[in-house]
Length: 268
Ligand code: ADP
Ligand code: SF4
Ligand code: MG
Image 1 (cartoon, protein in one colour):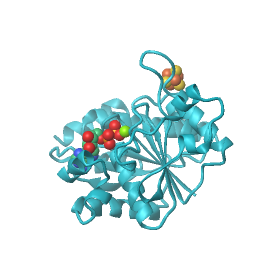
Image 2: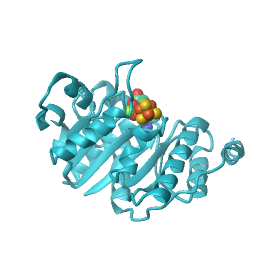
Image 3: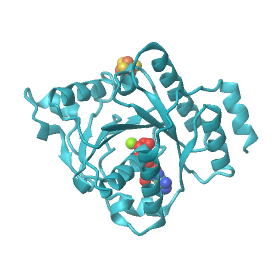
Image 4: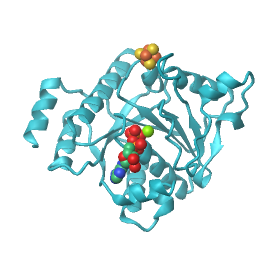
């Protein structure tokens, strides 16, 4: 079972990329599960044709006994979809949904398949959001970033977490590479490629900004389902293939903040 985690800043395109990769994996005939680990809980929405599935935390508040069908929902291509969920605004711990989700899935023996895709918010890499890496679930991490400084900053922080976790525990958590989800900035590919190199990794996919993503989103589908013949669908399929074939997993070398800023200046 491959356990692939996409980490990145909020709004950078983790869920869009995760859902399209999951759809591409399932098209290849693989048994796929996608777990949304973001309190925004919209990771699997396009796979579920716009449906907001109940989150694990919501179900825990509502029921004493939770069955697997209360938290695992079949989406496009028979992909098993789960949303960890988050606390009510202003109260509670955001990481709790993630911890509760993994404990419950383990108890149900429901974590299985050819590929499990974790879609994890990486703005705060606190204990809660680092849990999938620390506890050996997120074995291959892919950083989703654009060329914007703040998304590179978040990606660099996630590298710090991977490096620290690898140092202090036997968790099999490694960096698989960087996915550039473009914002159409000048020199963006060069910048993200160089960033990937400096952290001791590589750019695995460059995903252009595309209107097909918007069109698919308003029709409540992934691009793979909505516009399978489009160039963007091909980009996601190629990316899924590269990730499946990737065996080059590294412990990253995060940059100092000054170095990151200097790099961003070089590629203006
Ligand atoms: P995240 O999960 O990181 O918070 P989302 O996947 O929800 O981010 O993406 C945020 C917004 O950006 C969504 O409206 C999505 O449709 C849009 N988006 C993501 N990737 C692309 C892309 N390659 N081209 C165009 N729009 C995109
Ligand atoms: Fe929860 Fe993370 Fe906040 Fe700790 S830092 S309370 S784990 S969200
Ligand atoms: Mg998301």
